[in-house]
Every structure is written in C-alpha cells, then in structure tokens.
Length: 91
Image (cartoon, rainbow, N blue to C red; front, side, top):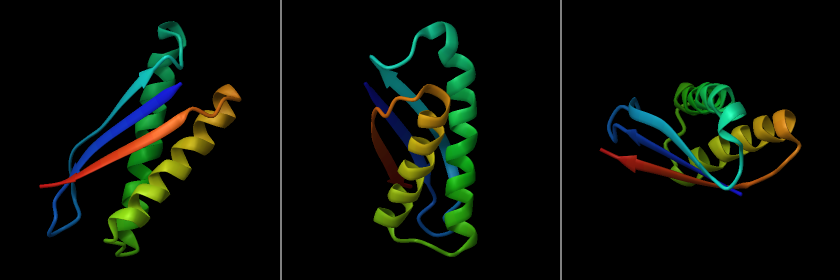
C-alpha cells in the first residue's frame, strides 16, 4: 500500500497553508479509513507544528519527521507499514 501526504507551507513563516491532504492507494478499506485518515491528518499537523516550534526549516528534516509520525501511527492502528510519500510544497 501507499499513503501520499500533501501539504503547502509558507516559505517565510513556516505556517501551514493547506493540507495536509492524505490519499491512500491500495491500503485501507473505505469503511475504516475515514476515521483513520482524520486522525492521521491530526498526527501530521502535530508533527509539522512540532518542527515549526523547534524552528526546523530544513525540508528533508520536516519530511522525515512527518513520515516517522505517520508511519508510527498507521502501524499502531493497522499493524501494517505502507510506503509513505510526503510532498511538502513551499508557497
């Protein structure tokens, strides 16, 4: 399975402009996925906020933090580890 995560961040302030939008492909059943995806979005937002609070502006570090947080969450909920592809755009 694959989870794609898309977020847009203000390049100057680091503020979240849009997203995170999470799309899963061949990973979860729709019946369970809505709740899972809502919580996944919160997990990602917390990870992004955590990076911003620490003043982390390095994109690769932000992507890694988001990926790790989401991966942990999905594993705890589903005992599966899909590939996670974070796409963070600077606006």
